[in-house]
Length: 158
Image 1 (spheres, helix red, strand yellow):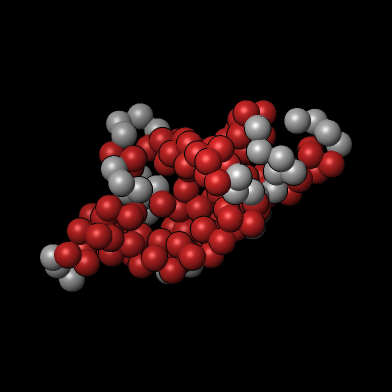
Image 2 (cartoon, helix red, strand yellow; image 1 turned 90 degrees about the horizontal axis):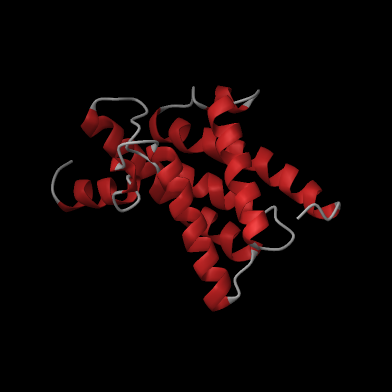
């Protein structure tokens, strides 16, 4: 596939260029997700349901974009593809009882920890074909982060 669909896929997959950051493109994608969530919370008073809605709405486009971009780059999970980190980070943030600088920081650390560590069964999701595996393992990591963030909120840790 060439032309406009391929270009759109690359823009989405790299999350508007965050994937080209030379040091830690996954972290750059996560930070972009945090900034967007903070802006949505500040200006629209958006909370966890908006973040979950964004994850659901962008899931299929993320799989499609990751798939096309991975094929174009000839790599099954290229570091430039960071839309999966964006969705995983939002999924983690959805576990926060309140959005504040503390919950944003905790969500960033938790998501990146689980995304890099990939505890069972997170790593197994990488075995799904193409874009499915690229996106699904980060959503699984995001679920772990969301659960810990939710428990932390229940105990008023942030």
